[in-house]
Image 1: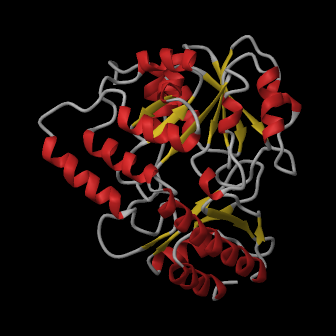
Image 2 (image 1 turned 120 degrees about the horizontal axis):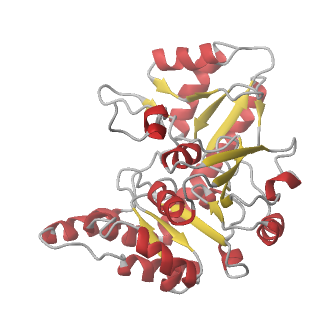
Length: 347
């Protein structure tokens, strides 16, 4: 196609996890929440649906105010997006020019690479160390380096980099660093307070995982106001619709629902990790709503295929110079037990 930019023609494109449109599956492949969202979300969306003849609030004021109270920041520190992927796109468009460099850890969320390629930029992947900390080279200076992505908890491993290490990284880096906290509600700590300590540190969140709103598409960023001012210039005028703003505002305002949901996911996660270990899998302790596992004597791709044949979807992943493995989202106890029963028959 001669009309398309060369880098787009060469682009493989990001491939989302499988979303079957027909039939009944147990979906443990895309880290969705297995439980329905707060009832307050449904009520709020129904009310908002009566006013669809008007444009939505371009900066999602109601959500920013509710989230600011929960996170102990001012509303002016928050940018909202059509899912956290929209936030990642806004950041890339704001900070990264053609020929610039984006740095990310390896392995991690593969969309980061795609965003760099769309922008006509380069990306550099830095391998995690054996203990899942980052090597010194992750903060090495480079005149082309304009943005660093750090998922925390990481996907697909569920591991985390500690707060002190992130502060030290930000001090050494010549550019902003985005701490992608898509799964942080399931973890032991977060990095929101670090944003106040260094203007280069920004934190993104999504309501897709812990709030059970993957189908609503709403995410947000916490950054210092000087950063927010620039990012608002780049985002689409009405990037969040009225239904998503209303639903997201109701969701983040219902912290009792969140804590109950997180407790259930953590309990099932622990059970999943223990039983996979008993089946001989090597399991990385997870801080997210999924578990990564590999096996030293059994190939895992046939297990993935066998599960799919039996209408259970998990994510098979294979990275260069790293073990292949299965990433299993934490479902309900019944869903996980069904998955484990089939896995047991193949190992």
